[in-house]
Amino acid sequence: MAREINLVPDIKNEFIKTLKFRNLVFFICIIVASGSLITILVSLSIAGGQQGFIDAKQRTIDAMEQKITDYKDLDKFLTVRDQLSNVTAITNNKVFASRTFNILSALIPVGADYINISELSIDLTKEQPTFTFDAQANAGSEPYIDYNVLDSFKKSMQYMRYDYGEYVDKEGNSIPAYCMVEAGDDGATLRDATKGYYAFWLIDGEGCNPGYEEDEENEEDEENTVNPTMRLENSDGTAISNPSEILEAQKQAKEAAKLAAAHEGYVIEQYNGNNVVRIWRTPQYAEWYKDGHMNLDGEIQNVAHFNSTCITYSGTEKDNGDIAWTSFNDSCKLVPASEDNSSGGISIEQSSNGRNSSHELVLRFSAVIYLAPEVFNFNNHHMLALSPSGRRNVTDSYSQIQSMFAEKAADCARDDADCNSAPTSSQQNGGKQ
Image (cartoon, rainbow, N blue to C red):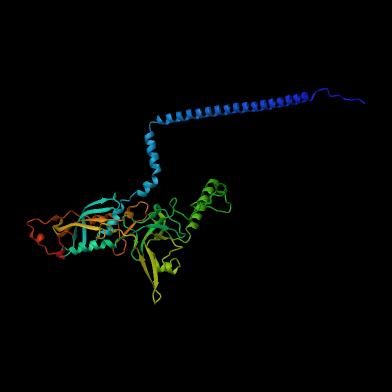
């Protein structure tokens, strides 16, 4: 039997193991160092690439900045941009100065006791717009210088109201303001002697049919397909045979059918060559209540009408079965009293006896009327001033406005005894009001 004899001392074995362990440690260190070096190189490469990318973008930005700076119309561009960003604010602050005529029609009394304006100044820049004017009051009969006319004019201010809102179709869809005609060619508000005020809805206008939805599905295929079952004729009664003419005629017939369906239930009239639908601004109480379009709470539905922002309606059934209808407008005061004005929104600055251009005796006075700012707001559509009696002004035509103005009256001359000593009604109210 062979035998193995270990001639290596134990200390030698330990030394060999130590060398192997050292070599392993060196190998691991080399691996770790190599990995670290690679990581550092990759990081430096990424950092360098990022810096190069940043530098390139910075150069692009600098070039664009220089190009913008060199743009000769930059100031104009910035002005337009700023204006566009403020379009909403500008629109909200826009005023409708032409409503002055409508307001004057309601403010200034006409008839036996009338007032003529000689000078008028309008200020719409204040928080509460003002009318400042010189005027003359004429009682129409002796005594012509009647302070009761002026006193009545002052007291009527607290009863002045305004109204605005929107017209809607029978489905309750809002009709754009530009699609409504509220005044005739003479400027007079459209009014029926028995039924009240109304407006015409231009149903053929672009965008004027809120309830009309255009069906675009398969529209292209339908427009290019001849319907063989549809017979179309020329004006002389002969059949249309040209395919392009047939397609055009079919398209027009389809559009007409769609519009007819959209306006089903409306009475279509003709006004100045346009197809229109009459929409009543004054509720047709009895008719609408009978047809179920209006209830006793004043709610209106399933009929084209005017949605008022200011006026509410209500009905009360009488013992005999009739309905008594009432309208309310307590929130929209045309001449509201300001905190520093206790006289109901009007201030009479001075008054005195005088003579007008026809040498008639009149009462001269100056006044300031403080108006509600809402009446001039551009966004408040279909604005209408209401007179003290609750009836809307008859017209805002230039003919009526013209009659409100007259040449300024003159103070009594020193040698005009009749003027200086003219008998007046409510003489005790003479002087400053």
